[in-house]
Structures are given as structure tokens and as C-alpha cells.
Image 1: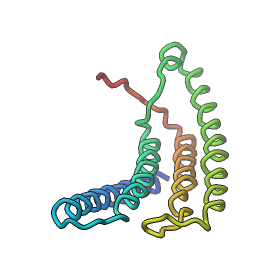
Image 2 (image 1 turned 90 degrees about the horizontal axis):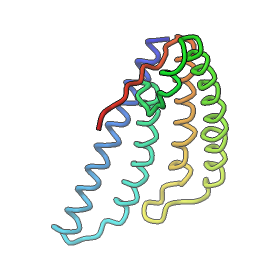
Image 3 (image 1 turned 180 degrees about the horizontal axis):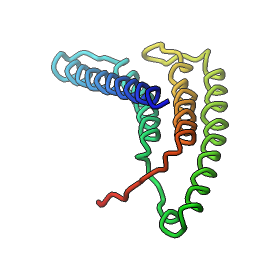
Image 4 (image 1 turned 90 degrees about the vertical axis):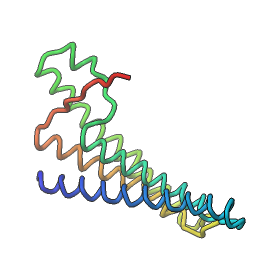
Length: 161
């Protein structure tokens, strides 16, 4: 189970890194094309926007799996160990339910609704763009189930600004 999570982490980091590199390349090309070569490159801005959607959601899934997301520590500090564990289990179940309904089911519905639409400049199917929602939702559910099965508690720390 831990090997699976490690492989999933590495895959998400690699994919996110690839998306980030592609966004930088496309942005550099857009600036060079516009200001140096004096030509327009209409598809680069749109493609960068869609890559940013995928990058944001895949990175959010990774951060969620690493348990480095934002947490409210009020309950952890106020209650005993058994109560905190109960709160974490209830939270995990709520995360699975809400993510399943909103991101997976809702995301699949959006993908189906937009499957006939294409982006204006690039011609990319909008279903591909919105597919990031159910994919991210499934990854978050997998990370939550892994956390529940391994019994790992979140050890979130407050970060000073």
C-alpha cells in the first residue's frame, strides 16, 4: 500500500512538473512571438490556461495526499487523542462523500455536457479540460482511503508568515 502511494506521489510530481515546464515554454514563446518576432500566437494563451487548470488540480491532489493542506487546528488542540481520531475519521468520510459527489460525479457530468464543445483558438475538446475535476477527485479519494487504512494521522503544523 505504501509503495502504491509512493508511485502515485512520484507520478503526480512528474506530471505536475511536466505541466509547469510546458506552461513556461508556452508563455516564453508567446512573449517572444509577440514582442521579438512581431507575430501573433493565439493558441498559446488558451493552452497555458488549460494547463494551469490541470496543474492546479493535480498539485492540489498531491498536497492533499501529503497532508500538507490547510487545516484548522482548533479541535486538535482542544480535545484528547481519541476524540481527535474520531474527528479525523468523520472528516475522512465527509471528504470521500463530498469529493465523490462534487468532483467525481459532478465532474463527469460537466465532461459529458462539454464533450461537443471545442476551444476557440486551439480546437481542444472542453471535455479534456474539465476531465481534471473527476481525475483530481478520484486521486483525493484514493489518498483519503489510503490514510484511513494505514491509520496515519495528519500532523499539520502552523506556518508563520
